[in-house]
Length: 290
Length: 270
Image (cartoon, rainbow over all chains, first blue to last red; front, side, top):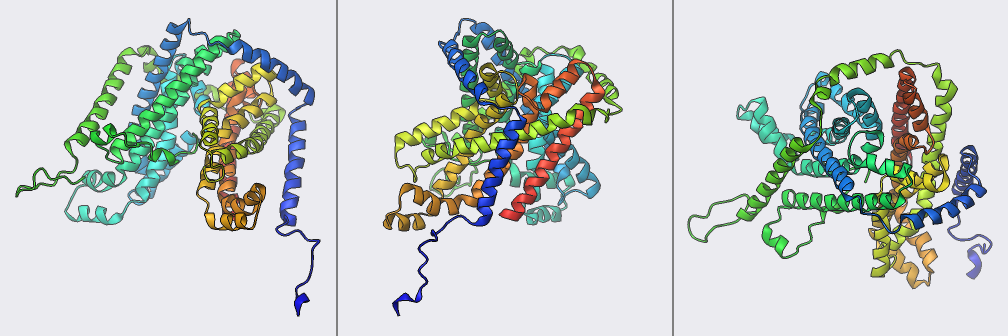
C-alpha cells in the first residue's frame, strides 16, 4: 500500500521545461553572435577599464568656475521646456479630440491619428536635427522639436482618454440642446481633466529632460555646452554640468508631483503644512519612457 | 471637497475650499509668469521664424526623390547594428537591473538601508539621458557600438529595475510564506515563490523597454556610439539629403515594426 507512488528521485522538482532550456540556449547564442557582429573584444574592455579610472579621476572635483555659461545654458533649456510644453499641449488638445473615434467621424479621426503616429515614431533629437537644418541653430529648433514630441505623446494618450469617457453624460448634455462646443466643454473635458493634468505634467518632465539634450545637435540649451565640454576633454566641467542637469530634473519632478497633487488629489494648503505625502501619484506610470 | 461654511441654515456646497482655490490659482499664475518670462527672454530670431515654412518646404524638396539605391549599400548594415545594440543593451540591462530591483523591493530585502541604496541607483541611472551615457562610455571605450550598447544598458537599469521592484512588492505573500515554512533558501523563494508571480509583468517590462531602446539606439550614433545614427550624421554632414530621407524612412519603418512585434508577442505570451 505504501509504494503506490512512483519513486523518481532522479527528476528534480520544478526543473526547467525543454522550451525554457531551448530559449536560454538561443538567447546565449544570440548574445555571442551579436557581440561578434558588433566587434566586442575582451582586450577592448580591459583597455577601457584603464581609461575609465583616468576619466573618473579627471571628473572630480567638479569645476563650477564657469558658472555663468552653465546658468545661461540651463535657463535656455528651461525656457525651451516651458514654451514647448505650453505650445505642444495647446496643439495636442484639438488634435487629440479629433482623433477620438467615439466623438468624431472617421474622416476626421484617421488623419489626426496618423499625424500623432508620425510625431511619435521619431526620436526628439532626430526631429531636432531636421529643424536645425530648416530654421537654423538656436532655441527655436529645440522648441519645435519638443512640440512635435509633445503632440505625439499627449495626442495619443488624450485620444485614448476621450475614447474611454462615459457617453451618458455626453448624451445628457446633448439632450439639453447644447451646441457641439458646449458638449465638449461641459461633458467631455470635465471627465478627462484629471488624466489630462497627469499627461501634461509628465510631458513637461519629459520635455525638461529632452531640452537638456537637443543642444547636442545645435538646437539650443545646455546640451551644446555639455557636448563641447566633452569634445574639449573638460571632464571636470562636464561633471559640473551633469550635476546641475540632474538637480534640475529632480526639481522638475518634484514640481510636477506637486501640480498633480493640487489638481488630481485636491490637496489643500493645510495638508501641505502638515507634511502630507504628495508623491502618491508619482508611483504610476503614464508614459513609456522615464 | 464639500465644505460647509457654517452649520446654520445657509449651508452652501462649495466645490473647492479657499485654500484649494488659492493653490490652483498660484499654479496658473506661475505658469503664466513662466511663459511670459520665457518668451521675453529667449533668444529667437524672428526672421528665422517667418521663413521657417519656406525653409521646411525647401528641405523636403531636397529630400525627394528618396535614394533607395543607398539602402543596400550602407543603411541595412547600420540598421542591423542598431537592432543588435538595442537587443544586447536590453539583455545586459535586465542582468544588471534584476539584482537592483530585488534590493529595492522591501518585501524581498527587508532592510531600509539597502532599499534606499537600491532606489538611489535606480533614480540616478534614469536621470542621465542615454546620449549622456553614450558620451561617457565613448570617453572610456572609444567610439563604436560597445559604447552604445553600454549606454542603452545603463540607461535602462532605472526603468527595468523600478518596475521589477514594484512587481516584486506586489506579489502575494502566501506561496512565499509556505516556502519559508518549508525551509526554502532565498534563492528557492525567488525561483519558486516570486518568479512565477512576476513572470507576466517581467516579460511585458522587457518587451516595452526593448521597444523604447530601438528608438533610442537610432539616435546614439549622432554622438558616435554606433548604429544608424552615424550613417545619418555622415549623410547630413555631406548634405546628401536624398540619403537622409532613406535613412529616416528606414528608422520610421523599424520603429513601427518593433511596435507591431511587441504587441503580437504580448498577445501570445500574456
